[in-house]
Figure 1: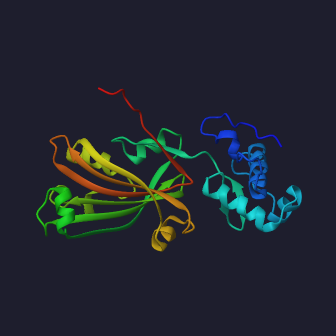
Figure 2: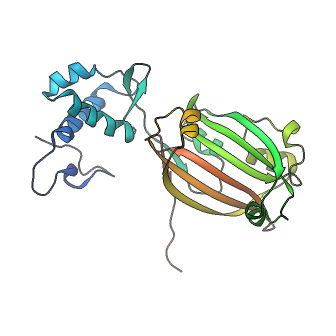
Figure 3: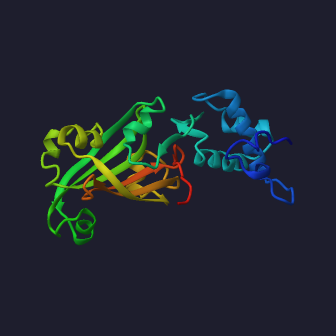
Length: 254
């Protein structure tokens, strides 16, 4: 069997074939389904599991294993009771730029759906990150991230009430928080500490984002500071691993 495009950027070495040359049946089916996806194009429905199993001469369970991997990789997605070809992953820069900017640059329509906006006295750990005294009031804003009305992530933002006292009445929750800070309050971002890891969503998070619980997620923790070096916000953002990749530019060593 030929395995095309193995030298394409990001493709596995020898297209994932083990050195002993014995190819698992599910993987052979996966490669052939991937070729079919290229022929069909984004948004096109796949044939039924029964038809695919007959076409590639594999059992239904073997076929399902191949499909599960393609779902996790973001090549296909469930739509109703069927399966369709997924579009390319959204690229989000690891930089001090808003989610809105990153999505718009790729020709997609960004959006957000507010889950909740609450204020409460911060505990010692959160106070230390935001440069506050324990017990000072903070806002917690939780929003589902959208791209062309597709749910792709979940964002939790913590910010001192003293920095944005009218957040509950003066801010449109489906808009960019960065733009609000800059344009309405004159607050600019200076730098940030950021950590990226892979996790599985909790049952609640999976329900809000609309994904299976076993789908890998990309989790970003960020503490941002303003141009004067004062802590500004703490953000926890969960992105769907099948819909996002992250990019950055590295410079030479000093």
